[in-house]
Image (spheres, rainbow, N blue to C red):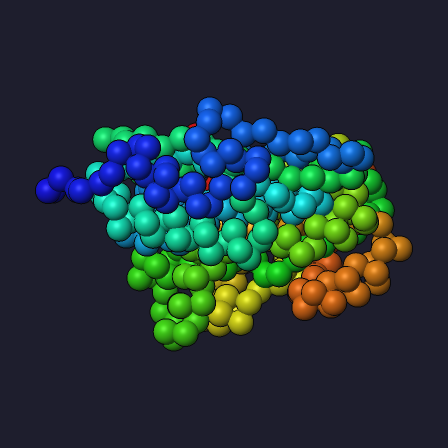
Length: 329
């Protein structure tokens, strides 16, 4: 492979990333630190996710969509805690395929989503690597003091809800790899979901107002609800027939001979970045009104009981899974 023509670290920072920096707190990316003033009556909430070529995105994925996915998976974590995002730290590990046009595309992707979600770059680092490209983001947000929603607050009697639809992330990966037999429009929609998922930041306020526990669906619906159940010390019971599917996912599901096996792929595949949460039954009507105001699909998929772990049923029969979802190394 011929050598790529790229600028050095400092030129990359000044030409591509300094224009993305917060005008005050980021110090023009000309210092070793960012300085963020405290906000009276609020807690500072931080989350960090990394994505690696060949694991979280494909080597053929355009780097603008890679940048947007990086930001959105972090935004999804903050949304599930009920926090409002405001800024981020970034680390870029450029591989040999990341020439100047690719780096410009990456910065363009960040710029686009900064505008959409109202966040600014605060600082970070950029280096070259002989290995696959990888990128890491630390996202910061604010939430009123003591209001952060954890995984640990679910109580017996609560209902279990999920935003949006489940399975599009896994199907989108199948789509970008050419393994789906659906019409072109459906494959395009699923592929777009995989590359640039939609974090439910607009639903953060209802989450912090009514959810007793919440988690974003990144590893797979079953795996993530298992995490929530373990943290809360409860049993989560799920009716798999009620799990919401998009039109494209429903079309794929209807074409499968083994419904149970197909549903297992959808609820364990991951990369959905919806919010699964628990809330008291008395708040269901209010939650539905809040979702409707945001034109957001909200589905009740189960309940919380005494016990431990997760129990899933389909067609009146219990279902067990070989694995609940994606496992990190």
